[in-house]
Structure formats: C-alpha cells, structure tokens
Image 1: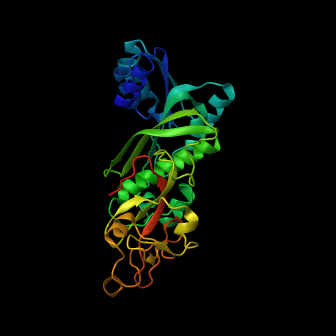
Image 2: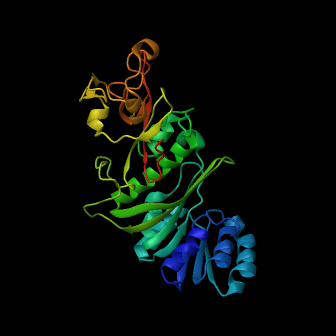
Amino acid sequence: MACVRAWTRARDGAVGVTALDATAASGARAVRYAAGVPGLRSVACNDVDERVREVLEENLDAHVRSRGVEATTTFADARRLFAEKWLEGELYDVVDVDGFGSANFTDDALRVVRYGGLFYATATDGRALCGQNAERCATAFGNAVVAPSRPSVNETALRVFIGDVVRRGAALKLDVSPVFSLFHPHGPVFRVMFRVDKGGGARSRYDAHDVDDGASTRVGFVGYCDACGNTEIIKQPLIDVFGHNKTVEDANGERSSLMCSTCARRGSPSRDRFGSGLCTIERRWKPCGTRQTPSGGCATTTRTHRRASRDN
C-alpha cells in the first residue's frame, strides 16, 4: 500500500484511481486498497471460483462500498478477463495478480495497465526460481538458469522474476521497471510491483548488451565467484565472458584469464593452491549460468534484472 500511496502523491494526489484485483478470493486486497489508497474511485474484483461470491460481496459491502468506493465483481479465468478488458479498451491504474506457482499472467495483465500505472505480480514457485527445478525455471522465466544452493539464491530468484517481467513488457513495447520487491519464505512468495510506461524507444530497459553506460535498470547477467564469494554484475560483453577473448592483463601486466573484480584487485590466484585459474570466467562460465566442474572451475552466471544488484 505504501508504494501505491507514494504513486498517488507523485501524481499530485490523483483522484479517480481505478484498481483491478484479478485473483480476489475473499476480497482482502480490495479492502486494503479502499482503506489505504487516497483517491480510489473503483476496484474491480475477479476470481475464477464463483463459490467465493457470497463472502466476497459481503466484504465489499462492509469495507469497500461503505467507503464510497465503487466495487464490481466477475467470476472468470483471469486471462479471459484480461483479454475482454483489452478488447473493450478498459485500462486500470493498478492491476494486482496474486497468482499461484509460475502462473503470473504477465503477458495478459500488462495489456490492461494504463501508462504510468502499476502492476503487482506474484510467483510462488520457489523450486523453479531457486534453481531446484531447472527445466521449469527455463520454460516459465525466460530461459533463465539459476545455480541452486548459492548465497543469496532467494535474492537471485527475485531478480530472475523481475527480469522476466521486464522482458515480457519489452516484447509488448512497454517500459517496465520495478519499484518494490519482496521475498518471504512462507510459501515461498515473491512479490514485485512494477511501473508500466510506454516503451519501444531507443533506450529500452531490456538491454542485455549495453552494460557499460552506468544504467542500473538494464537486464543482464550476475556472476558469483566460488573463490572469494564476490557477487557482481558481469560488465564484460557476453562474447568475452564466454571465452572468445581468452586473456586480459592483470594489475601486474601479466596476461591471464578473466577474473571477478575482487580477485583481479588481489592479483591472479595461485595455481598451486586454487588449481587452473579458479576465479576465471573465461571458458569456465557457460551461457545462462550452467556451472562446469573442470579442475579449478569457477562460478555461475544468471540472467537477472540488475536494478538492485549487489556488488561486493
């Protein structure tokens, strides 16, 4: 609610805010919107299960309509609802989808968000996002690969989720950027609120190659170094990371394989102690994060959204 309230303040206390809860269930989120969002004009509640009609209507009467907020109900599959609203040209300022598993309805939901509006997405498929179910992660989240059992794996999973939504928005010529994200172990639950703007310009937020311009809202790769534990954005072009430029000069002028920035500052790792270039990302970083295990093999890379990336 704090994000939505801040959004309304940024719009000079916008009056006439419209919201759509596509997976309403008992209507708890609609109640929170009515109580916490100033200027809310209407909230549309939908659920696929018509058996919730009685409790939903009761809650809307007691806590939403009683506040002077218009409330409507429908009972249909969320994707069908989004398609109908899009065909009718009906757009909303806030679209909330509390989906289950990997079904976040992103492609359909983004079409009914008004430019400058907010999209609140959910994923609960922790096994996929955290790399335990690699096939599902790849198919549901933009061919992403996450190395399981790594430090900050839940944070990485959240980034993968964000990156997938940004990518899907770019395919629809929308400029989608995260404004709030949450991971909670109960579930687990990954919740992200996005701002949706008109996109398709020369500087799209989805740009996996333009990584040296200092833009923090791009989509790219994050690497974890097994030698020192450093996690950082992969700043080299991907063709370098995957071994086509085989050597670089270190701080001492010696040519060596590519290393993470922390190990590069410390100098080349000892081959006697660490094996054949433990920290290298040349040849030992495979596309999309698959981890090789040759002697001295390194790290993992993951396609994620890098807006809030951690650079140790």
